[in-house]
Structure formats: structure tokens, C-alpha cells
Length: 427
RNA sequence: GCGGGUGUAGCUCAGUUGGUUAGAGCGCCAGUUUGUGGUACUGGAUGUCGUCGGUUCGAUUCCGAUCACUCGCCCCA
Image (cartoon, protein in one colour):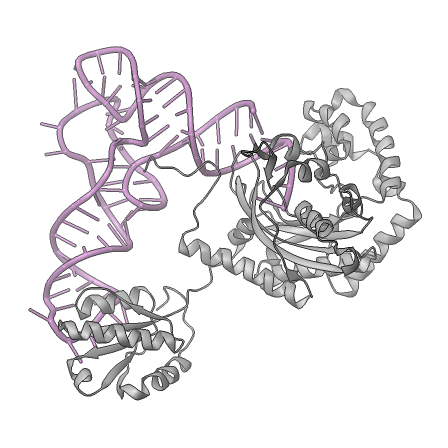
């Protein structure tokens, strides 16, 4: 074991991990494109105020998990802990209020100073979408449908359930908060120490506490549903009906809340029990107040973010690597080595993925071809060179033919087209 | 941030009641096969026993600290 360790909570993505990682991101990107969400990117650091002001001073993310530092000029900067605040800032900075509906997809690293665990790192990656400027619940339906489609595309939907709740509008939420705090204050003695603290800061959080005593108290607490005003109720009903129209199953969870302050109305999570304590794989909701809070025009918004590492872990098997063509000079004559390099470049320029081992006799090179899962070997020996030809060997069937050099690409293309699909390592 | 577990080869792990040269499987390298891979057989290489310190004639083994991972809490994607 090396003493050269990476920073706590960070990880290297070796090529095999990277394949799974890219599969998640690219599936997200492609699916989002079908739903009309264009990709954009914001900087991975912002002025500290962008996050401190918007995420709310009750969330742990702001109070103790941000990587905030002063640059050489003394500006306080923060490595982004999530994506929505940056997108909202960009929406305002670029004067996009007249460009609504503004529909974007993003992917990139996020940073939180947390205690690492499986599925929880200090640098991790999210994909996410935001739909800004549409107050209608149809926007929520579209955003959730897109999320589901991505999980479907990744083949993980069977491991995942959609939980849904409404937080109501500000008026409903304030009324409920008063009622909830009043109730909980009457049972102070039975609440956990954590929850007694939360009573001040973030009473809604007590609803999804895992503490036994808390759960008993909460079981008889007033429900948010009882405090929803007519507008909030109608919004929630429209959302549920919209989801049902699309055949999207969900479970209502009246205790589902959001960690960040800017959410209202819709809250949802796709969760799994396959990842231990870190069961949330994609989560989001509506944040109609956010952009105004940041100093922009009052603008509605709804979106979600998903953990790329968590999704990668749910993938049944990593996607197969592309199978290259192996170029194999057979013989020790240096001229063969040079000619093989020339032919390799010629094939690559023609669009083929070609692996050229750098050393070894023919047997070694064939072994390498096998290890990289090459589909076809292009063999160039003394005989072929003199005949202006190469031998193409199908490495799955073992059949091989010798073809003239000027027909190499065409024959190779035909051989590859007839290739059966074979998974990595499954030869 | 709190409480528990773990750390031995590239990987998964065994082992040492403190004592000379620390093991297995997989992987890797080589050979059987110097113009033909996957299988099989044969042989080989690789460890500061996570790190630092303490106890001891002697520590990979005991003790302490530390770092990392991991499980639960917390938080969240």
C-alpha cells in the first residue's frame, strides 16, 4: 500500500470506472436532449455569497460543509456544493429572464466537506436539470419524466422508487411550521437531542428523523397536507394527475422534505435500498423563490440532481469497452514494424480504432490483442508485405483471409460488420 | 461532527499464542509453441504486514497516536 494517498474523500477514476461514469453522464445528456434540455456549464467556484445566501443558513451544507477560501485578492470563494445556485446565478448574470422557458442539463464535480462513506465523497459528481420560468406543474411533470427516463435508460429503474411530496407554497408552509413546532414543543422530553436542536433551525427535518423516539412523536404530528391552501392543493393534484397520465408510478411520502431552503411545492426523490445509508440517487423539487432571493426577477423553477457515482454503483454491469482492431507485425524485420505503423495510421485516419502493441514477437502481440478484446487482427508478415497484402483474422471465429492492401479498409469493414456482439471478457 | 469495524502482494484474503527466509487464489512475466491469441501444464517476480512512536534482547503480531476505508448516526446526490 502506497503512502501516497489521494486527499480524503476523493477518488481516481481508472479507465474501467470511467466507462461506467461516462455511461451515466452520456445517458443523461442524450436523454435530456430528447426532452429539449440543452447542456450548459457554470464555473466550479463562485463567490461564497452565491451559496451562503441561497441555500439557507439552516442547512448543514452551508453551515459546515462548504470548501470556502480566500483567493490572493482576499475574495471569499466557494467550491460549489451543488449545481442549482450556479445555474440560477448564471441565469441572472446573463439576463436570460426573457429566454424562458430555460431548460438546461449540466454535469460536473461538486464539493462538500463531509465524512466519507460509501456513496458519499468530498468530491463527487452530479448530473442535473433545471427548468426555469414555468410556474405550471406541467414543468414538474416533464422534469420528473426526464429523470425517470434516464434511470430507465441506465437499466436501474427496477432498483429505484419515486417518492413524492408537496411542501406547499410559503403561506401553507409557514402555517404548518407554526402548528408543527407547537405540537413538538409539547413533547420536547421525548425528542432526541438532535431533534431538539432542529426544532429551532429546521423543524421540518424532524419529520424524517430515524430516531425511534422521534418517529413515535412524529407519528401523531399534524400533517402538512392539512395546512395546504387551495392553490397548493390544486398544484399538487395537477402534478399527480400529470404523472399518472404518463404512467409514472410514485409513492406519496408526507414526511419527505428537502435539505435546502429554496424549495417549495414539489419535492421528490428516487431512492434505492441497494446503497445502504446513501439511498437517494436523484432528488429535486420546485424553487420558485430562489431567483428572486438572489436578486433576479421573480422566476419559477424546478429541477433535480443525481449522483453520478451512486448511479454508477447501481449499474448491473459496466458497459463493454469498444473492441479495437489489432495491428500485428509478424517477424523481426524492422521494416515490418515501420510498415505496421504506417498501416495503423492509415486505418485510424479511415476511422478504425486500432491497437498497435509496441513490442514482442507475434505470439505476444496476439496475446495482447486478446487482452484488449480486439475484434480482428490485421497481420502483416514478410509474405504479405511482398505481396502488397495483409491477413485479416477474425479473433472470435478464428477464420482468416489475406486481402490486397488497396482493399484492406473495405474487407475490414465487412468483417467488422458481421461481428457478433461480445461483452468484455466474455470471449 | 459522534459511535463501532477494518488496514498483510496489483486484487480478494489466510497467517503469525512476539522469534531466522510472511502464504494462497486471481492477475502479471516467461516457457511448452521464435507466422497465430483465448484453454491446459511448468516455472518465475512482486510485500518498508497503512504510517509514526512506545514496550521488549527481538514487533507484521502487544500498546498509543495518526492516516485511509467501511458500517450506523448526522447530512445528502
